[in-house]
Image 1 (cartoon, rainbow, N blue to C red):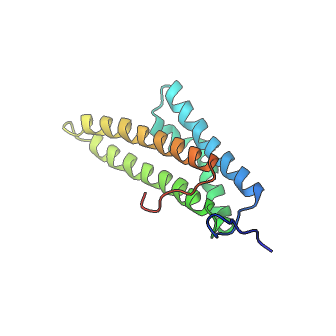
Image 2: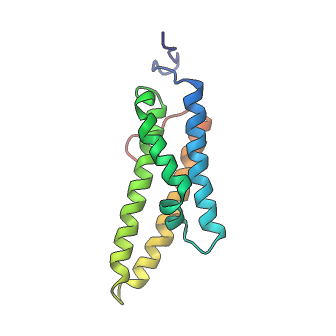
Image 3: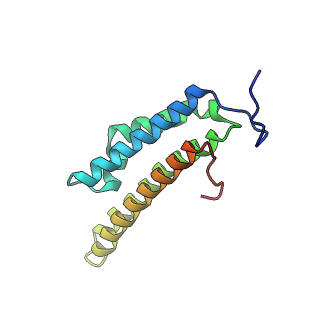
Length: 137
């Protein structure tokens, strides 16, 4: 029998799944920190670092177990962060091939990198409070 959260009425996720979600945020955070302290951009480290790639794979493998719990929104948040970051990298790389687009590409790398950092921090803080992520974002 599944435990029900009395406050929300939703199924309570297994403690091991909550721990895994913390590990996934930690993997993403590790790559972001690597991007900050190295010559890599946050964004490129996030998309090409093995910890983030492993984290996204874990998201896809375990998201069915999170379905119906507040963790489902965290898994969606993490997956969307990765794929939207990839989209911004592709746009930036397309802009880099034009002289006019180089400053825009650099701005995209910096702004999207900060956006990734924001999403990791915000998601992890809400997970720590056992809260789901907003559906719209």
